[in-house]
Structures are given as C-alpha cells and as structure tokens.
Length: 572
Image 1 (cartoon, rainbow, N blue to C red):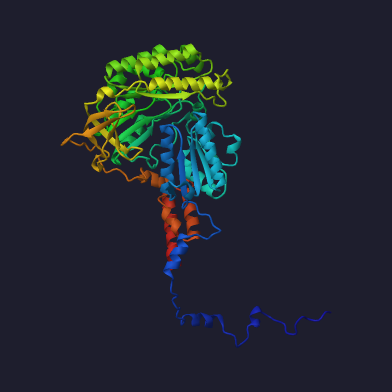
Image 2 (tube, one colour):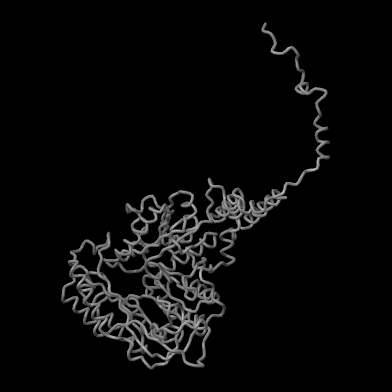
C-alpha cells in the first residue's frame, strides 16, 4: 500500500486553520474599526482622462466630420439633414477637410464632371487615410463601380440612418444601405421631413416635396438613383414649413426632380399644395418654386398663374426645354414638343406680368443636326431668357443615350460656345434702372462686398452690407445692372419688414430637435461621450438599441436611470 502523502489526516477543510489564526467573524469585527483614508482626486487629470478615451478604443459620436455635397437643391437638402442628425448625435461638423476624421461625400450623377470631382475626392480621402461614407445619386445608381468597392454607402432614401452608417464606418466596418422606403408596399417620398438639419443658410429652408419622377429621359442617370415618383403628404410639408418659420427662416425653396408632377401618386396636385403653403407664410417671407417639366404644368396653367401672382410667392419658374427641335426632344423622350413649351411660357408671361422664366438647354445631344441647333438658337434669341443653363451633352453610363451615335466632341464644344455667346449678347435688366423695388435679403455675395437680395421676380439685387438688412424685406432704388444682377440703394426712411416670427438660428446650429426626435433617438446622449470609456460604450449601446426599436422609450429611461445610478455609486 503506498505511503500517505501526509502523516496527518484532515477530517474537515477547516482543520487547515490553526488555533492562532483569526476567525472570519474576528476579521469582520476588525473591519468595523478601520477608518478608510480618502484619496485625493486629481481633478485636472481626471477631466483629461474623461475627455480622451484610451488609445486602443474607438468611441463613435465624438469625431469630426467633413461633408461635401454636389448637385441640385434636393441633394443639398439631403446634405443638410445628414449634417443635422450627426451633430445632434454628438459629432462635430467641420468645414476643414484635413482636420476631419471622416469624409461624407454626397454625390451628383447628372454630368460626368460632377462624378469626376466625386471620384477624385474619394481618392484624396484614401490618400489622407480618412474614413469615408458615400451618399447621393452616384452610388445609388451604380453601387457596383470598382472605385466604390469596400466603402460605406448610404442610399438617397436612407439618409435618416446616416448615424448608424457613420458609427459603423468609424469602427472600421463597411456598411451599405441602399433600400427604398415603403409603406404597405407603396413607395414613400423618402426620409421623414422632421429630422434635424443644419441649414447651409439659416434663412433658407429647402423642402423636397417629392422624389423621383414620371419621365424616362434617355440621357438621365438621376432616374436610376431617385426612381419613380413618390410624394410627401401635404400636411407633412405644411408642418415642415411652419417649423421653419418658427426657426427664423424667411425663404422657402420647394424642390424635387419634377415639382410639376407632385401629388399624382397620392391623389392631389401641385396647386393644391401651394395654396396650403401660402396660408402659413408670414408677411415679408417668400416661397420659391423649383423646376417643373412642361407636360405636368400644362394642365394646371390657370391655377399656377394665380399662385405665382400671390405677393408671398416669387413670380419665377424653372421650365427646362432642353432643345427647340421636336426631333431631338423625341430622341430624348421628353414627352412634349416645342409648341407645348411655348404655350406654357406665353401663357405665364401674359397672366403673370414680369415673370422670370429660367430654362435649360443641352448642346450636342446624339443626332442633333446643325438645323436642330439653329432652332434652339432662335428660341433663345426670341425669348431672351434672363436665366439660362447651357450644358454640353455628356453620355452617362447605362443610359440609352450613351448607346446612340454621338455628336463629335469638337462640334458639341462649339455649339456650347455659340449658344453662350447668344445668351451674353443681351442685357435682361437694363430697362429696370430707376425702378423702386422691394427685395428680401438672404445672403452675402461671393466677394463679400454686398448682401444678396431678390425682388418679386427672383432677380438678384445687390445691396449695401447693413447688418440690420439681413433676413429683412427692404425697399431699394435700382441704379445699376449687369448680366446676372442689379444694384439697389436703400430708400431713406423706408419701412423694413421682419418676416421671421422668431430669431434665426445661428450658422451651424441644429434645426428640428423636437421632442419626437429625442424620443425616437433615445434622447440627446452627446454628453455621455465625456464620461469614462466603459460608460460611453454602455450609453452608445443603449442609443443603438433605442434606434433599432429594441427597447421602448420607458425602458430606455429606466436603463438611463440605472446607468447614472451606477456612475454615482462609483464616484462616491
């Protein structure tokens, strides 16, 4: 029998404790007589540690983000909404690209040069080791392009989820959200209109009334991104306008891919919307209507003329003709002829005296002959459009026009130059010198020498930089004119209208932080980013749960209470 490993057998584990050792109850009694010594806290060091998380951690919600937007006013509105949500979450929106941790690039797919700028910006961001999130029409229309691979993408209808995409991108993940929003199978206009936003100009609110369109133009890439028509309900648009005026806005722009088609998918129309909006516009504020194609304005001409004569609506309309050749319009699948365009313009000029008609023209569309081009030149010479957007044709990948026989590049360039020469041959505002006009001042000129205002016809008027004029309706005498502007001298002792019902937000201030939004997001948690890293992670996870609908607001509040109780216990 093998020898025991020890000579003394233990009947119980407690036999290991000798008689001289203190018993558990003795140790407990001794603890009562111990006076803890308070350790002095280095407040400065603690604050630095709280502000600066450990080097091996990545805490979303505290980084700097640079946002660049190309393209139309609809795209600019999307960019404002994304900036507002990110700022509300705790991110800092910066105008310094090199100082940013992440670049949010909001693209335009209308023309090749815009996409080239977008592509070059991606390359530059990669060279500077920036985190990248891509948005806008380019990745939505062609998400499989080689230069987009491996990068985070947020679709044009998913901008209300930009925080999630940015958060995951900062963690080192690649995220793609490109789906469309639907309600019972019906496509919606897009993200909610009551989201926070940072207006580029605190005095101007851009409202997208619908997304997509009813056309199928052979040259258009935007249709691939924005899709078919989907309109916002009238009450939501009116509520957004009311909120804007309460935040000091004095000018509203209505925008979409085609405002004239508004409401056809939800059983209403553009004039009905406009009359509802006019009811909530305060005195001295103005409404500007965006681009509308000829086919959808034709059936509302009488009512549109009445709306455009309203004193709080600019007598301005952007109606793209694109070409004065019916053959070219047919190849473009524009669904109207030149006679339709003329009918719209002639009617509005008669019924809305002085109205400004802006239009677009594409030079060198596939199949355009010299005769086709000359018809376009004659149209410009006849109407002398004060605002004319001349575009050289660029074949966009994936469009029918890209497969057509192309006009030689040199011919396209020459036609663009020729039409530009015609446009600059006349002066649209010379006859207005000496007029007295009321103008709404909304911004500063590029050279910072003047304030920029617009008169009743949305014509640009430069006025002296008197700080009291900004955001106001003032009276001026026109004393000079140029190709694209007039200059006005303020009338002495003239009444200055203050259209805003409240003080405008500061530049960069977040708009729309409503109670509903706070509930939807689980409350403003940016302050948690200043707590210690463990607490921040808990807060961020809670916020993520609230966003995903995994917890209700009441449960979320209970968890918050528990979280702060834990902090209090740790620091006491």
